[in-house]
Amino acid sequence: MSEAFARKSLSAASATGAAAFSPLYRQIKDLLVQSLDRGDWKPGEAIPSETELAQRFQVSQGTVRKAVDELAAENLLIRRQGKGTFVSTHHEARVRFRFLRLAPNQGEPQPAESQILDCKRVRASAEIARALELKTGDPVVAIRRLLSFAGLPTVVDDIFLPGVLFKGLTVDLLNGHSGPLYAFLETEFGISMVRAEEKLRAVSANADVSSLLRILKDTPVLKVDRISYTYADRPVELRMGHYVTDRYYYRNSMN
Image 1 (cartoon, helix red, strand yellow):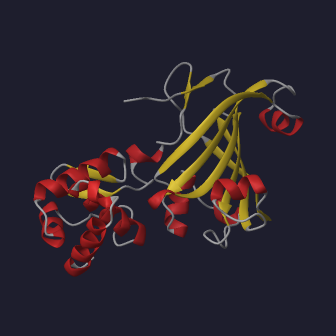
Image 2 (image 1 turned 90 degrees about the horizontal axis):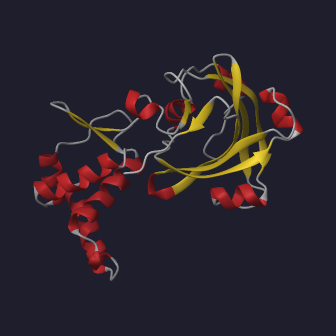
Image 3 (image 1 turned 30 degrees about the vertical axis):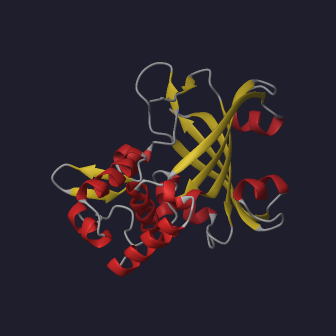
């Protein structure tokens, strides 16, 4: 981003009534998010130093630091002592399992074994379109995945992705990748999942789900509906999961 562009963006922001109440560091934060969204700095890459950013935006280094601090707190950026600040990536160890909340009742969490059962292009239902801010009938990629822990089927995920963003995604591509799904989507399609919203409730497993999870039909399971967002709060994934929780619990932390 050029200095002229940055000054123009800040001037335009302060010219609007709503932005007049936005602190300067928040305006800088918004500009940084725009840069991340455009791909000016790729996942895993270092961003310019605070001194360079302060010069670019013509603001104090303290203002930049406060903006970067908020982005780090939101896991969009990662600070590394003595090395600089980097764009978060799902290949980073501390970010990799940020969205996986399942933990065993006893012992340490074990790596999940992922099995892609299906991947196909379908038309978005009204529910899927609403969640992904698409039109009913728009193309989406539908993925069904089974997660097992220590050989025991534990989670069935039905995942829906906007078709225009994930062209060419196939079962073979997915099965040829080892590691977190979000890391794969980030690398292959340039889409970073940066936050998610979830709704949880208890349901009875239907015949389809119970067969995959090797449980009796109507066994209580935890249903987790998730919408994941990329930069600028754009929804890019709808995930509906069914979890067996007799050996696991859903973990969350609140600060």
